[in-house]
Image (cartoon, rainbow, N blue to C red; front, top):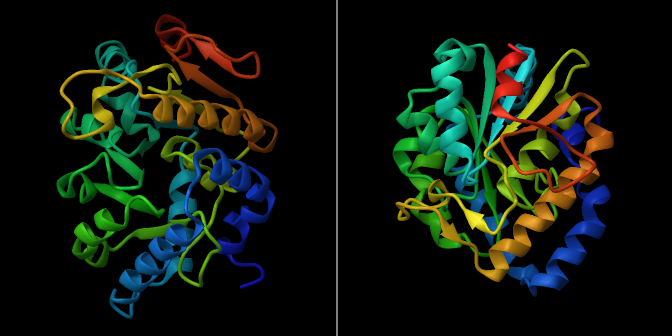
Length: 276
């Protein structure tokens, strides 16, 4: 597997210092992370013999590389306004001409707007099984806090064809550790080695503020104030994206987001519209 796509994506050795810092700062249980990893690995082992991780990774890579623009959707409070503005001003064809990658619950909004989803990156706490089945690819993450959700989604994981498993513990033969912490920054960590020089990345609904968008969890109807732990997680996500910028090597823009970092490029919705 030396030259495999799995090996190409794996960056846990490079990310190890981040992981240690995160574990210590949040007092996470390393053994729980390994328990979740092993559970997801065993679930994937129940898939049909035709399941081939390398073939799915190759298909996912080809899907990422087939269009010039890649949109990554987070669950921040600007998500709904931004998507609806683009629909009104650029039309649904805009989304059809982009690679659309949703961080967890952002998939619910895209499905409500019938926007095609190329991939959902999820730890399963923001989506429903219905959302799960409407993407081309699903990347499911295992960590110490989502063991019960892995059990709940077990049959969906087994039955969904183009699924990829990730872990933040040491990887296994059928799970990848791409680095990253939250679903949003993990998307970028996962695809960084697939990006082509002619492509551009747009982050939509990634605000990193103390307000959490209502699509973050299925049981929220309105945006809500982040608790201290959630806000700290968002700040880590921002720092990790800043860390990834030199590795990404293509233009990356945050859309309709209040500027909070001089390392990132920001576009208003009007400026974004003018680019197309």
